[in-house]
Image (cartoon, rainbow, N blue to C red; front, side, top):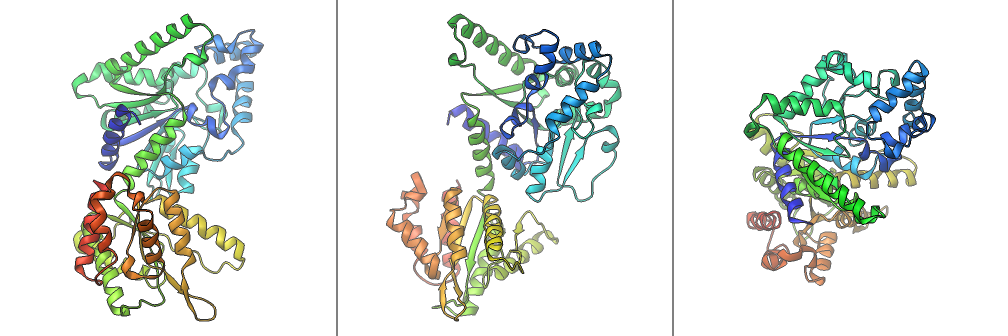
Length: 479
């Protein structure tokens, strides 16, 4: 990954952690899910007007020409309805941004992918589609989605014609003011956005005029670099490369938007994943189950689990737990005790619980749902810590916990930092032995720094010294 991209990720992650970040999503972001962009949406209209859509840059005027020709916008409304009425599946990029701890989302898109992705991730978005929505606060909201150009559910109100844009500042001034405020107070990342939208350009211009450029927030946009392979003629490639360079410079100088250039749209997914990974390094998924705790007593084990959880919270880590049998309850007790002692209130962000749904009779359905639950939990964390890992089979025999094995495999697929407390035995010991056999390659360039600490995860007893060694291990791996 390029140094420029790494620097951007570091800065944007800091803004997210300080709750100062926002996302602006354009039509390009929805294309991988199967929705059309503006050119595809208006291609048929251009053909009816005997125009070439590939030669048209002013698509707002194009839509207006067609409305003028027909005498109304009824057919354009139908085109919007036809192209956006079908619900599409969220893309991987939508799923990632829904998991990011970002509160504010802006979009010019008519589709519902953003809000649907947030709901799929158990979030409660407050969607603003029209002026009246702005005066109503959705109960228990944990995110807000501004659809400043309307929604597919009301195509007749969608902003698409030139006259819509000309009257926007009067008819939708509450949206203009809200976006103006967010652009001043938050750091935006523009994704799938071309900056050809008259509304955005107007608002950015007003901010530039009204505020000292030295006090305007830094914003970012990810844009694909002009590629030579997209042009048959060398001179044409050089022309558009120069034009893009001038455009990028203009965004930076006039609007304080720094462009992050990528060579392929797939890089957006890599960037978003890296942002998520950096944010989740403070989130620890604790995987564990135990019917027995041999060679330790039940009291020793439960005290250790509780104290470990308490110390993790005290050291500013957050805990994700699925309430594993014989382990989960002590994780919760220790975490909540520390949270409540400090803040005098329960903070769901510090302790994310995902109890597995019970009472599902169909075994295949249950397994599928539990696997999805595990994937959801582990995606919230950058670290997976494994304790014990045994259960009782139907004959009363103690066996290794297959659920914990699945959590281990998912953690590896998710590229989480894996910390097996080998001394607790059972599956945790098997995971420890596997990583040791692989010469700690899992820990990459930091493996030399944690060799001694890794060994200490498998010796001694369940005491404060072991907890301190775990914390030292974490500090090295997350620094």
